[in-house]
Image 1: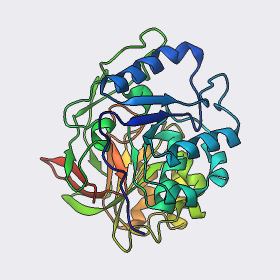
Image 2 (image 1 turned 135 degrees about the vertical axis):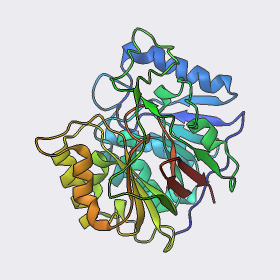
Image 3 (image 1 turned 90 degrees about the vertical axis):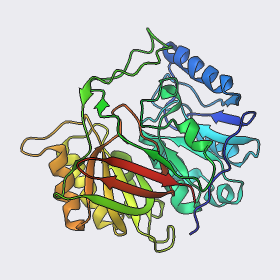
Image 4 (image 1 turned 60 degrees about the horizontal axis):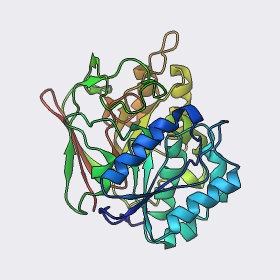
Length: 339
């Protein structure tokens, strides 16, 4: 299957905002307004959908969420779709989405992470359309730390021109900012030091492949189904597979990754990137040990503490992009090319 990229975003383009999983509670609407204004100030039109209710864990019934998402992905006037954030059970949309119809439409950028992995990774694997695992809309007002790239710059990047990202060396050790009190906050608190960590051994890493991956807790439920089948993706090219844990303890993550490996998700992996996590260790098993227990048998480099998880800051990765990962004692870098 050939990877297809939506055309780069340009001022005047329209961005669709919908909540395929969780909506926005009334007390957080201020942050939503700030994020929407930021897009408009960049010159984009913003169309906010009807599926935004935040009074429960879902923004609307599944049929309505699926219909709105499909409408945005097949509307030639909408060039990107970004949710406010993830949620819990976007999996209920998968049987309701017409992937053939979406695949026939002009490609549209889809951006997000967390529960959005449940939709974006299958979208790329089933249609070949690249998607962006990166900041959600509510994260967009934050200033991007040095070395990283905003999702807005990724979707505006010229096709075929590589862009590099390097870890800033700092991350946020605590929870989330209180957007009810400070809806317009723009400075990320990065109060801890941290670098990428090779888990499987010593030595330098320099490896290339097509990027694919997402949130472990959500993707594990798709293992062994057509929605997570990498066997026909991007021909026979090697893959750079990335995974990240949101909140499950190390035992659960270990089981999930074992299951994904047994189902073939990592079969073509040339390397595995693992997002930094604040998820808890278990008695006798750390999060790093859980990853190595499950993925060590692959015999490929496993690099952890990458900024592609639920811990700020956020390093956008494009599902489908050609990537090169370099990790040495002196340098850590990922270069992505949309070709």
